[in-house]
Image (tube, rainbow, N blue to C red; front, side):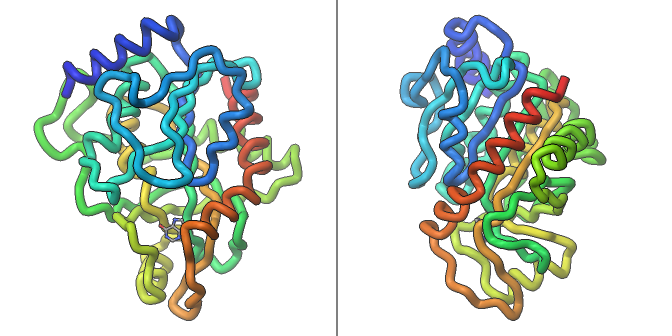
Length: 271
Ligand code: HPA
């Protein structure tokens, strides 16, 4: 794995020839954020050695290096999910590449189902913590000491400094952005009413099928992580609305202006 990630990182480094300030991962239906970047280099996943391929509608397949709010960003349009059949190593592969490229700050986004009764569809929520209920752990196996320690501190999974800046950006722009706990399940089924009830009971505010493996691998390598989630549907033990991928994409679309404002503001104001 180490050889592979070094080869991939070398390939990308030779093209971009700079250290980006932020890596940004776009979640389901959030691809429009890429139009905000003044692209310098656009790489299709298929032209990058060892890079995995996406299989989900609403997820692109491009790595874009460019400028956003005066900062250098490497944006990943199209992420890899465990439910697609990818191994945890594949799901988290890009994050390891970001680290080898010298990137310190990782901004993630995702779509999730809200169980907190104060949330509405198309709200955006900052992750303050998560609960990992994925069936496999991305750091299981022999530790790669070159990347990070065997036992990883998770006392601050989401960087408090970045959260504070994002909160200020939200206030300045009159966007209501609560902080919540994200529970990660494998998917690809959306949750049953009883499962939504369980998420709520264990202290979750929202539930989704991504993000947590990437956060764990990023923390292993001591990166600063920030994540914003779009509430694309609501669930609970007494709520039995049908959910579809189309509705998820539609809600993500509605929330897009707020996601763009938050991410751009954070990129601009965080030093
Ligand atoms: N569960 C429920 N709703 C969702 C999810 C999920 O994993 N992702 C987006 N909306």
